Image (cartoon, rainbow, N blue to C red; front, side, top):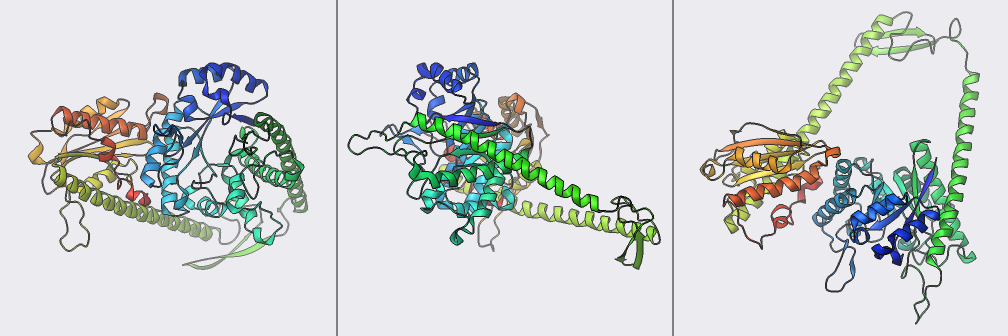
Length: 579
């Protein structure tokens, strides 16, 4: 199984100069690296040239993105790394940055995701669930880095998130040097205080698809030189962690997989400097070159140990099998009893003569088969009941989100006089039937006895959108008294023409609304090979919907109007916890 090693462009001055890229990439390739990892500021200088020169030198690309960051503050000229602690800001930023990165054709997207203030709670889970959907739609593996300030900043909260049943498919980038810094401690499984560490490291290994091989210590995320003898224990600890992660990856993926890792020692202030002169105490390029060589040695050791363990396990299994009877025919038999509503039946059979699921031989075989079919029918009924219950729960979440959005739209209409509105509904996940239910909830009359207002926006024409894995679902509604201004079918056709791709649109139907009117539903199928991703098509569709309304004088044509405020306001993602 090969280990592919990437070269970070962090701290490499030539990375900021497109004129130097050709010679820089040639040097990186000559030193045995297989890829580069770059942040947005690097590739944005000239994406086409950047990609073509990487291809020229046979280097793959790993894109690093930072949610609510990725650009430069025009006032301070400093890089903006993390500018918000709001869930909806990070969600919107992740979608945009991930889509931008995916357009470059990287082998991985490495994301510094979310905000550490969310801990392992509902916001954190919601972010990762949404990120998994985006990843599936983009078709590019996304790893989330264990990094300070971010969601996976601590081993304790990270372990809780990695154990969450809804995050079983989450991929991470293990940069465990950050955890040493956060906890002011290099973990040691032999120390009683670190009894949590083996299980935490095992969880990391189970989810890890990329390793940042930087050596941290108790007082910081990077030692001044990993080859220095005073950091020998820190280096060995990190190497042991990497070996365990690689062994787990090998067991998970098999021999055909490609594993990615990167020596990621960085520039000042990560790299120690001398006082007054600020001269670095070590040569950064040389450090990462030496670390790459050490990584390959450690990886070879991990693969050797994994192969030895696999061989020993196979030998033990073969030895156990050799002690079992070669054939059950004419030899010892086992007796067992089955219980059911027809009483007890004795089943006599050779221990391995009966294939799984077949009726056993000997007395009682007919009855045993009947009981088996009865049990299977009960299991099917149980699964159907579970599915119905889950659907019912999801429908309640959809109605809840739609009712709340309806109140928000009512408020926007009362304050600004808006007659038409476009927004997203997250919980249906591209299901048109559920999206229709959300529209009905948005239009519903308020219950005077209820504590909270819901619905109330039947007087406002709406188009709502929900992106799923396989398709983008859309439902348009125009109340009867506004049909002369906007034809609901014409509105939907204009949106579909603006998006293109594989589309389907139904005929107008009577709306479930006190104000009457009509609804039309439509879908745009996901076609990754054609550039159609539901998340991306959602933004295009919404823009086309607003353009049509403006062309009809049905929405303010104000240059100061921020459509993101209309579509992705502060409350837009409040109900993502219901996903």
